[in-house]
Length: 140
Image (cartoon, rainbow, N blue to C red; front, side, top):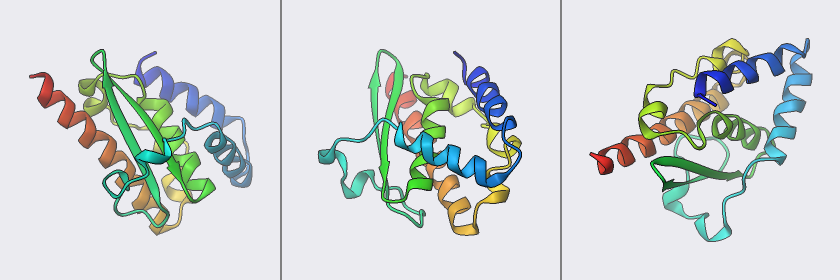
């Protein structure tokens, strides 16, 4: 699936919920399904700066695509990173760099997060795009 197709699926899933408490519960459930980073990868270099919670993100480049794993010490944050992984995992560096991730605004995520969590979300997206940039330059 393309990133856009995945985003549309996520938007459709969130449209099923009327209340933001239900959406938060869903995000937490998604976090429980997140591909967990190996303990050996919970290093300072994999820690995302700018997040209120501790969030570790690792990235593997395989067959021209990027594969992400993550963990967080906060369940809501783990759910947020799992949404991003769902959208970007297994995609090419170019597709990740070109992605606008409009689903974030369309599901109302940013507007319903505290300012510190919203900054953390921005930091997570930035880190994933930095991985894409680094691997796209290696391919050139």
